[in-house]
Image (cartoon, rainbow, N blue to C red; front, side, top):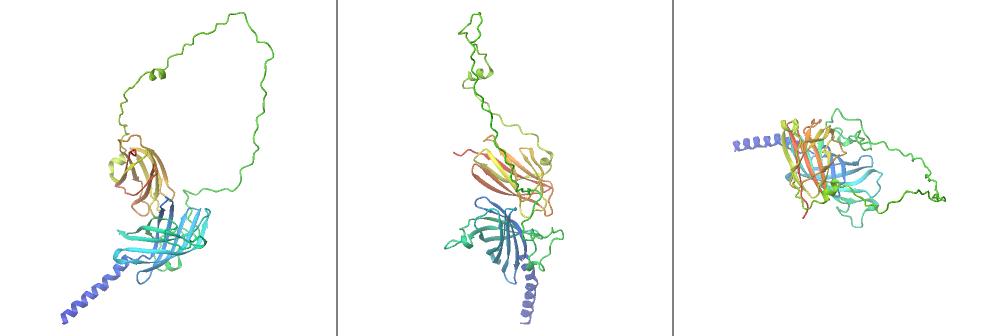
Length: 380
């Protein structure tokens, strides 16, 4: 009996020592930053500031913003389900909103999956929106105001200010930027000066109307005979000779690619995604994935440099590509020029072609390039 009690005591002590580590590993308290993309393709930055209580209940605030055109803040409540690593949190009401776009305001209901990779923690999931205030429907339900996907990463710095409920609970980055109170962040790369002065009013320029000149004098004639009906000989051109050729077979050759740059030879080129697109016209938009931490990239398309040492921000880097041949694979290679403050170099790529839309999450390092392969296939 005594041995059993000692064994039980040792096991209980071991569980007590282990449980704080497990709880700390799944503590959601802190700042989470990233973005959400609506089903319609709208891209918004998103920030959560969350406090987890002694159990698994959480509360906090959310900030959503679209550069200087829209900014909203809402209170939130939710809970973490340990058994499935699920995190459900919903906005209660909007407490601040500034918008130059007009329209209704919505609150959101988020459903996340929690994951960890090394020291990095992520929340990835979906959301449903619901109209609020005077725009609310008679029988409101989640989804009335659309839905979409959400990606967040735990960080140490806010684009706004640290809420009072977090100030004594988290360690902040000592290199934090100045506090931005109740305003969306201003990005040097994307901010344009807006002027409200009207252009000078100018009167339309009217051209003077000139009357046709009629010649009242009889035409001057000479005594030389006039030769009429002279045949006109048209010179034969290359165009004319080309038209005479009928059913000339066209020999199609594969395009010759430029030599592979050294950076694509010395690093591993890892395939991130292979896409079949319905149109030869392809638009590629590249965003920073999560916190704006100074990631810089270069991009090669079929071994040709198309972007050189560009910084990833909330505003997309845009490429318009042309896929000439349906039988040829085309490769877009993303090269990390640096890893930013938080390695690795991560980005979100949105591809649009022929009315279709694809999302690719990309990771590159100083040893590995990320490859996205395209093939154009005309719909049947």
